[in-house]
Length: 451
Image (cartoon, rainbow, N blue to C red; front, side, top):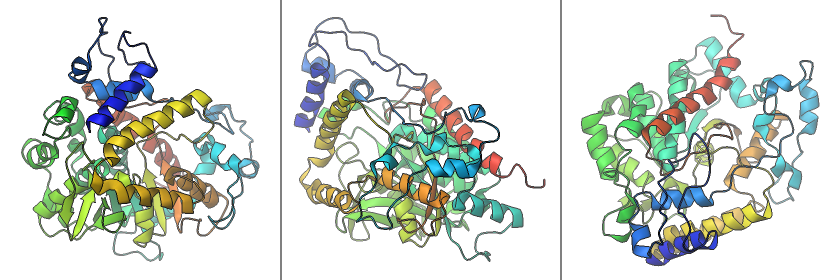
């Protein structure tokens, strides 16, 4: 752990002088608040005691998203007579198998810059529309499909997918889905979604934007940086009580996704019989190694944070029988070219954070398994695979190379949020950005339906 902290600190020193002002560099309305400058030279101990040290390091080193767009993001600038088939011609073709070479151009497409009218043609969105039109209910489908809702977490950045879920709830579209799959904070968001308690989204800004939940000074002590007991056992029971009964009895089952250090894959926790079982599953799904404690033992599996194997649990949903998946993502779409400086910074940043998370002996096999999975996928990350599947769906492939139809909703690229953000106004804006992102797509999807 201390070696990992030292590596993080050395990265800061490599990217600035050792006696420089210590500031958060990126400028955005959705960044962790810039801390007051510290003009004097700081010792390592003093830097470690800074309340927002690691979140500032993450923001300092994070490369801004650079997207290679095939269309202007402002779709109003696209000619009104732009035909959808012309847009499709600009999308890359893919081989049928992941063992074949993937064209490099595929990784340079920002699918969210395509005309919205084209995005709405995706089979997943069309299935949602058809279900809303006929008013079908979970457990009473006649279309023969299984539609999953996959929800990413991302620490405090999960407020974005929380906002997306509440947008779906407020639009009255919850009944279109057959199951909800949540990773880490995404699973916690999903509980309030399924219980019909939209005020649960306020947990981020009101109740856990404080040092009782998240305190990076604890990284050098015995207590975890992230206090999941405080969130699940106290906040979700006493402050903004979750109606656990409604979640347990929901016609739309909650599938909590974690990472198994025994099967070396994502692992679905489901069929909860008591609130305690659900609570322990939520903790396991969010147990970031070293930051939130050691593995949780459930059903004979040592479980850690879902993001180790599957930050966006669309593949878990497909393995669970889903034919179609709508993925709600807290990360902005980041496919596209990066400059050489950003590539180096990202490489060092990933090495530093990876050193902390993967340093414990119990994480070694999981790290190797994740790298082997990426190798077998032709070197593509899960985000790149999701992009590929989305494009294949738009081009009429049944199913896509990942085994099902996957469409995703992201916050806009200008929305940057740290996973460790604890600024209440920023978190509230993030919640609204999530709502806005999902409404942009789903309101347009049903705009021509009879009232």
